[in-house]
Amino acid sequence: RRRRAGCVRAIQNPPVRRAVNTWVAMAARRQRLKAIMGTLVDPSKRRSLNRWKAVTRFRLRPGSPPPTPRAPMRLIQAMTWRQACTWLQSIGCDVSRSPPTLLRALKEGLVYQQLVRTISPYYFMRHKVSTSHERGAGSVFVMVQQFFDTEAVIAVVGCQKLDIKALTAGKAREHLDLVQTFRTVHKARRSEAHHGGW
Figure 1 (cartoon, helix red, strand yellow):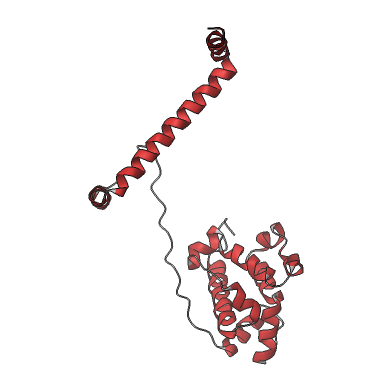
Figure 2: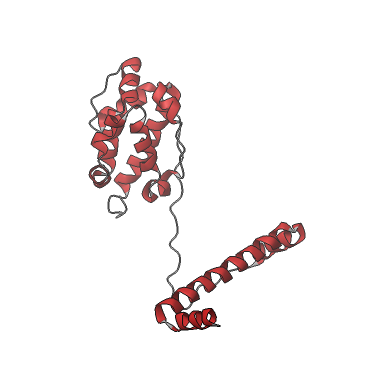
């Protein structure tokens, strides 16, 4: 009886009561989620859910702004060494015309740091891109992957998954594809210079 009375007095205390209410609400949400996941195990109910999603049109709430149309994804085409060298020099990158020398420079990663700085100076300063090569082999390409994971880049070329091991090893095809992707993003950046996400 004393323990029961102590529990009642504790629950009557506002901080304790709020904690109990929070725990009860969380347990109820977990139970509902478990029940929903349980229904999806049944194939017939899962098919019904997919059919409902296919035929249902969700209406916006009154007063909510209409969804902004997304810009179409840009096609990433193949690039040759001559095209890569010509484009990099046209935007101010001091690179060699010799493919082996250019590949060596790309493998070191400093060219990609300069490309990030050209495309987004804010990102370059905010994420300390200039020191990314000091964190070990492949760290520059990890930085590039993080840059490609930003919303502004995804809106242009979609989700890009880099082969960091191949880039670190100096695979020519991977580097040409990466330079072409940067070229596509750079072109979009120039045409949408007023965009705030860069």
